[in-house]
Length: 232
Image 1 (cartoon, rainbow, N blue to C red):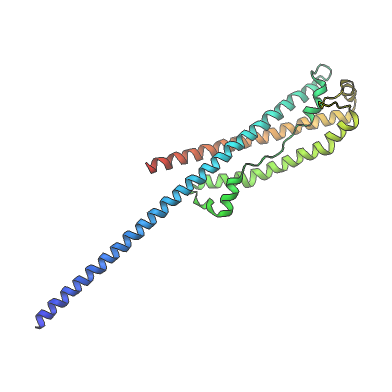
Image 2 (cartoon, rainbow, N blue to C red):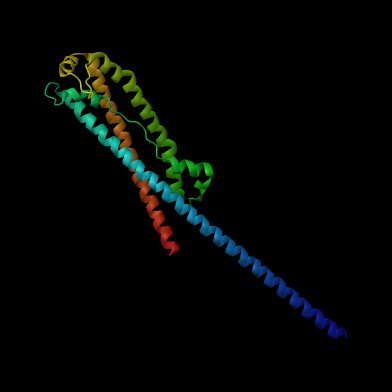
């Protein structure tokens, strides 16, 4: 009887151990499946976040490129005035070229939403996360300053001078006689020179922005391609 009891006990212990082992394996598999599902969900969320950022950056580049072109045209016109006033064409359009400037058009909605929702942490590529944060937190502040500087100068200096010293028609064109007379005014020529220098400085800054945006786009596109390959 004792031997039979010992055998039953041993059999029960083995059975009990097997049950525990099966339960542990089951829990382990369940945890792994849950982790895999969470990982897959996070990868999908990350891909969505990167795609949204990419779209905003594409828009950002278009906006910056527009202002770069616009400021370059203003520079070209004003430089001709500074070099040889009388030979410059379209003198009646000088007001149009003098009042150009930079107004920051923000395209950062996706970044702001990701930041405030805490989903920016989903981006696993630390280089992209660092560079995107640097662009929207630092470069954007600089651009906002340039935008305010440009608008303030136009509102406080250019526009008041034009309204005071020129006859302006319905098409915003100036009287050429008034323009030629203004060429002898040191204040007017200083305004032209200062605005031209401002255009150069702002355009240079925006061109730097474009380079940063292009690098960010390349990094994000490369990351999205890697993500797509892993899914396949």
